Image (cartoon, rainbow, N blue to C red):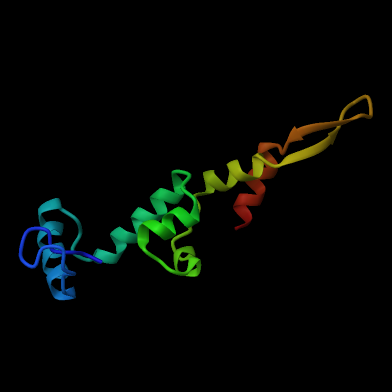
Length: 117
């Protein structure tokens, strides 16, 4: 939701047409392609917060969603973040002397899992 900050009634929600007019004007000044809709910025923001390590419930609060399901639409983890998540999982490995050793999954294993998605 956008609110009026500079024109009365200050703090009141802006009408969709006013938001679109503002976006079109700012989009042109910023050099953003005219085919980019306003919602694409919201989607990019949510995805960027998640890619930076933000939690889904944090993004839910930032976007004002009441349902986590609405927020999950924005969760498109980058392949690098998926690889890092898989590599954090401890994996028992057998050492040459036959003893178990706690180790991290090898990057080849992590990359093969990420590429299957």
